[in-house]
Image (cartoon, rainbow, N blue to C red):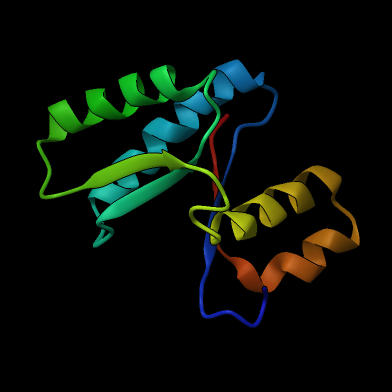
Length: 113
């Protein structure tokens, strides 16, 4: 994966539960994507989270009224690049040498407390 021509950004919300961290990270991520040249966002499909994700992203899209931007919830089988984000997230949760090994994939770290 490290030989692919891509970079991942990591949003980190320390000391928060997943339920608290996910909306904060999605809000920050979506705002940043709308201020960039990114045209689409693929989110790994988890049926229990889709409605909440859509509320967060739709709220930001209503406020910013952006250029064409689309997002969709897909499986890694439908969008294999999600495997890279899974590997990066896994390395952050496991730490140690995994962080060093995935470092070439990391373009940016965003901390939200």
